[in-house]
Length: 112
Length: 113
Image (cartoon, rainbow over all chains, first blue to last red; front, side, top):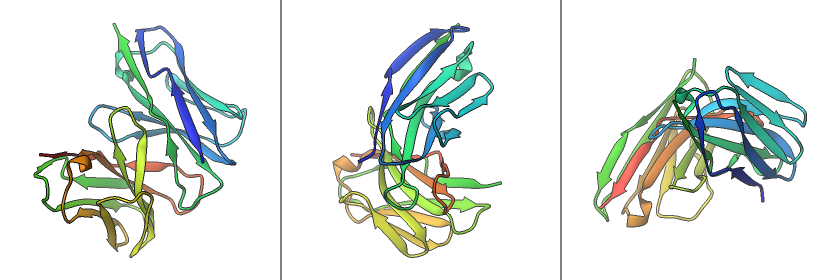
């Protein structure tokens, strides 16, 4: 069974204070690892897909990296508008219909 | 571009009443469609998925059912709601091929009284 563990559960940063969120996973064979951002009361918004170890993706202040056991979401010089819950999900080679297994997320708060 | 619509945004229902939540997708054909439930402090739990009209797969046994009467329409239903059905329900679509991301609607907050 695929499993995803995210840490920390919550993170509070000051504006400009860079940090990283962790997503550890176990999967029979990785088809893809996905990062989402979720604002309160809204659905998750897709950020990145990573397919193989060593791959990196960037978008504004966010950079996602992938190893064989974990992924990191690096946040450089965050701003208050980056405050949200960040979700990680994996898709393994077993199962059908592109099933995703989600972690419980990291709740990020960026203060002035 | 593709868009996904879910309604209603919030719903308050008494125990034992029926339920119908609707989700439609625009701008794509033959998508995979998904219903998730998100509980506080827990990851998204996949309830149902569909790879085509009339094709429904259930991931967990429960009081709910799903139907796909049209290619881009997905409906979540219940004949009699339980208190435990309260939660945040999310619809998502994805491309038919593997390793593609899913895209979510803005969800329905369901409260059972």
